[in-house]
Image (cartoon, rainbow, N blue to C red; front, side, top):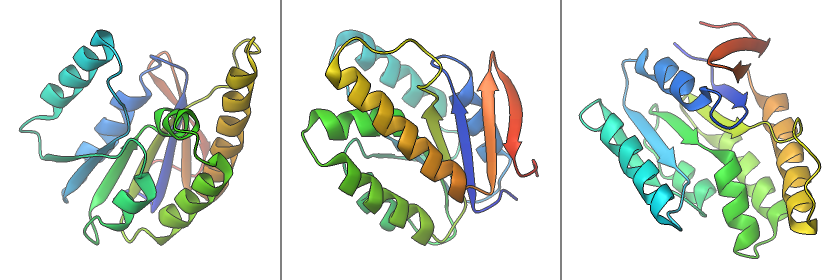
Length: 174
């Protein structure tokens, strides 16, 4: 069985979502996939459709939570495993919707702490790239870095995925 909070971190296209799904599939309980992506263009629409198709019939219940992730977490059945994919898209949605990201992150952290079942939370490591050239990009990168640090501090297991390879940063794999 997985620990209460597993944090999977990695760069874009690093294999972090696939790794998180593999961990979840090893649990024989209700699995909820909490998706945070929004389809703003054709490419993202196709990507979301591919992800949905890959999970279809595989024991997943999908909940779309692009903005109200804390509320969606609070409404999941006790004991269900929830995979949140991903915090990066959620936080960018919050910022682009002109919501207070600090208050939303505080509410999210409270929801993660209160969740009664195992959680797997996926996020991008945004601090290893170039410094964004726009104020909005720097604001997002800094807010994402702060959120990642908070989740990692609370996590029982933290794993960095690079090139599809998981590296344990904190805790131990079950």
